[in-house]
Image 1 (cartoon, rainbow, N blue to C red):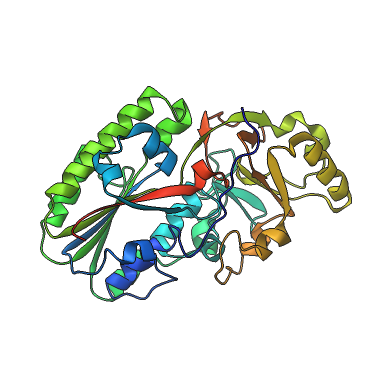
Image 2 (cartoon, rainbow, N blue to C red):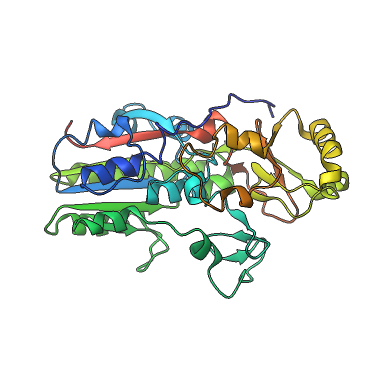
Length: 369
């Protein structure tokens, strides 16, 4: 596979952390940050329903690869904007549900280091990294790094706001069934915001790769089903977007390089495309040199202070825990290589880093301009 790719740096005035703030302002609720100008221009009239479909992993490159230019998604695409960094579900969906940037909410990646318990934790599940063992006798991420949701803010001003997801009761793995739930709610009285998180095509992309027939069929189904709902609703604005994109990858295992793992204080965290590295002080010079020798053509090893100075995870006021959750370096993928620690699943496609395919996402809008 090719080495270096074109990198797209985050833009915190044109990303999916801005989208919910446009929704908040529209409903007269307190915003958590700047709005998304690309969306604001379509929120210039009053709608009974504003619906956001978040299709996990459906980046710009995936849309263009699998859907016809004159089909309903691409013909209603109003622009391309960016994911937050890390371009991964934990960071991006938390930003979409809160209006906060990653540095502000500190839900940074699949596994995060929490100094309160001195453990890497799989944040959605409160498990110790790589296990199904509870990290503590309380929910560490939701206790240490809580955040106010968009729904809470809308409820505060007396408006209606709802969230649907396939893993929330009543559970469903059928996008058609989910759309019928949305249709029913849209028919009920009152102005409302409805957010739908759907875990495809991300799951299939990981398992089968960006160009697979399974992904192609899933994309056609998603487009047909969601657009049919959108076009049938009256007095409704339907927004379709993504948390991040995907890139086909090859894998290396850090455990195969004891000269590197011997330098580490703890197992890397965040994501295999962007590793959070705590390095022994006396080993830093050696580690930098050895990492560059082994992975320098496909990873950028950036000192954490530079990450913060460049505001890669946001321009807002960092959460009190933000700096303490980060180690000494971030290893940021610049090519197709994904570096696991040991024993993790080897997905065919991944995300999290700064390549064009991972960072660029579509804004698709059904409704009167």
